[in-house]
Image (cartoon, rainbow, N blue to C red; front, side, top):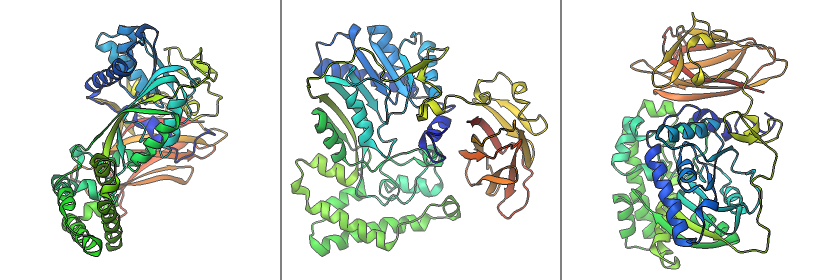
Length: 498
């Protein structure tokens, strides 16, 4: 694990995608297919699909590539940091009667293992924002394109200037009363994020980067190619607050004062709804200083409206947008790669391709788990050497889980000469009980402590001490009393990595 640290977002991605279901995959896969086929039809009409080389980056569980590879006989590669997601995508394709023919490659999109100038087209949908280094990811995708090849990008968020970024909110189905009221009032894009609903990803240390300016995309695109098509979708980002802002007929100090009053109203509405739940969740409200700062930025953009080439770009900078684009890589006098990979790759028994385990890359570091995967086991008996029957109960409903039976439940692990990385995904249940703590201990050391306020999935990432033979999972009430509450911790992933 030399290539990863405890705060590496790849760890959260790896664990989250190991068992997260997504009912929208079939619909999204069809939409992705329409997107790539429409772009090729319009901008590369002479491309022979049977000889085409296509790459989908951040493919997740989508089976677009399997459909195109099967029906058009294209050489289609799908890549993602999560091996589980790629495997599930192949299973879902086969479940719909489509043979899984795309080549699945586990890789980190910051450093793709593919050869320079190999692909005719690269597709990426809603994935570039999963990094703090979007320019590096964009350049990698452009690098692997042939001269004249197409980069097809869809649904990538652009930054919103009119936003406090005060907290990461839950998704609609899990919102607190506070969040739902702000959502219904159209205030979440200003108080939380233009693309609210990122709390689960934040809990897992994953990246939901909603601060990528449109100008960054444009600059990287024009470095290596030309933009053939670009649209900016506002979705629900322009509501009553935004329309009121654009109607303010003032300049200078008066403009800033009117914007401050508008923002104070939004913050005041949030303050009236703020409760103990939000305090325990760590949600905060914008300060008066932040209100002044945001009013200044918004006023500047309002006064600069005429400097923008069109209103779409101006509104996108103010309120955010989802970017869709097609870019053609500039022609260059360089040879086209004849082989797909620039590094030594390993093919697993099921056809999954990844870098060799001894490679110093994040994708390789996640390749050698030390324990069986819970979601791959047939029954709880396979896990009893680690999860004693008196402490844990095997439950197989929508997902396979091990649930706690005591206030303190133990997990037996084989001692190792060196510290190992511990990754645990568990679902914490609150029901009608007050908030409580879940703590993980080993060898007298506190590995992790989390305050549970809502029913939600949590991630533990910690270094397991050398020679540790037992891990204890303890529940304690917020006032410090042991909490004898079975079925509160439901472990779906328990993994150790060297």
